[in-house]
Image (cartoon, rainbow, N blue to C red; front, side, top):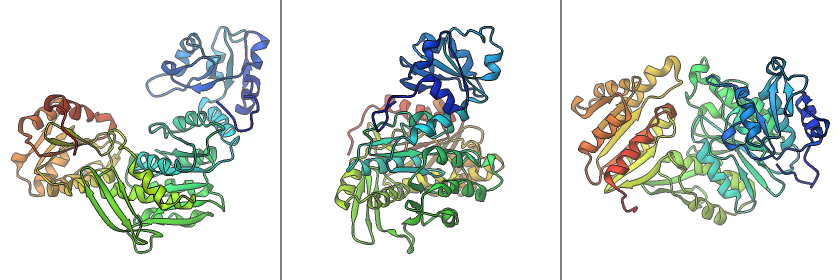
Length: 473
C-alpha cells in the first residue's frame, strides 16, 4: 500500500473504524500497527498483510486464519459470528478486525484507499472483451502516464477490491476491469472505484442464468454510467443497440466507437489475418494490433477513443497498440509445427463464440474447431449452443465438441449441412486433442474455445507438445 501525499498508512484501529468493525488484539501496542497490503489467499500472504477471511461455496476463509498468521499476516478480517464462537474471543492470540460481513467491510476500505488518489480512472465492463480492452487502453495511456491496471482479470467484487490496494502515489492513471454476475454489482464496484471514464464493450447473454432477459443484463451493465461525473466520459459501442439504450443514463458526455455511421470514432476499413489486424478510421488514422478478429478491432477502437479523450496523439496511440501482445488464452495465435493454433480457451459465451468463429472465417487454410460447453446460460443454454453450431457449420471443415452441453453444437452443425462424418462429440479434452492430432495437416487452422470450467487450454498444450513448436510468421 502507498498513498499520494506521503501521509502515514492507517493503523489497525483506524482501519477497523473505516470498516465499521471492532479491533481485538492480544496486547494494546498492536492497535498502532500498520498493514503492508491486503490478501485473501494464504499462498500469497506477505509480511504485514491484512488477511481477509472470505468464504466461498467450497471453502471458508476463516479456516485459514492460523495459517495466514503463521505466514506473516499482522491481522485478520473476520466476521463477528466466527469471532463469537472462538474460545479466545476475549483475549485473541493475534489481531482481528471483527465485522458483520467481510466483503462489504473490505469494499469500504478499498473505497477509502481509492479516494486518496486524484487521478483519471478508466473502468471497463461488458459481456466479452473486457480484459483485452483493458490491456489496450492501459498501453495507450502508458504513452503519457505510469498506469495501474487490473492484474489479469481480477474483475469480481473481491478481485477489484484487492487490486485497488496496489494503487500507489506515483501512478498517473488507472484502468480497471469490472465484471458482474448479478444486478447491483457494478453499482457497488463503481461506487468504490469512482471512474472518470466508463467503457462498455458490448452486451451479450453471459451469466444470463442470473437474469430474466438480456435487457436485464444491459441494465446491469449500464449501472457504471450512473456513477460517471459530469466532466467525465461514457465510451460506448455504437454497433450494439443494447449498449446504446443505456446511454441516456450518463450525466457524462457520451462518445461512441464502431462501424455505425453514427459512431464518433468510426471504423472505415478493417483487415484481419492470423498474425493481427489493421484498421483505418473515417478520419484517415490507421492502426495495427497483434490480435486477430473484427471483435478485437472494436476493442482497439475503444482504446483509441479513450486515448483521444485523454489527449494522446494518434502517433502515440498507434505505437502503443502495435506493442500490445495478446493476452494468454484470448485469441492467442500460436504455431505447433506447421499447424496454426488459435487459443481462445480462457472463457466462452455466445457473443465471444460468434466473434471467434467470425475471426476464424477470415483465415486461410482448412479450419478445425474444438468447442467446449458454454456455462451459466440457464434456460438459454440449449438454443445458444445450437446457434454456435449453425455458425460453426458455415466456417469449419471439422467440428469437435467437448462436454454434454456442446453436443447441441454438434447436432446443430449437422442440421446446418455439415456431414456427420466431420463432426465428433467427445467427453473430455484428451479425447478431443487426440482426435485433432489424428487428422490435422500442415497449414490447418485450429480454434480451441470453451468456458473457463472446461479448461480447454489442455487441448492446446497437448497439440503443442505433440506437434512441436512452429516458426511464427
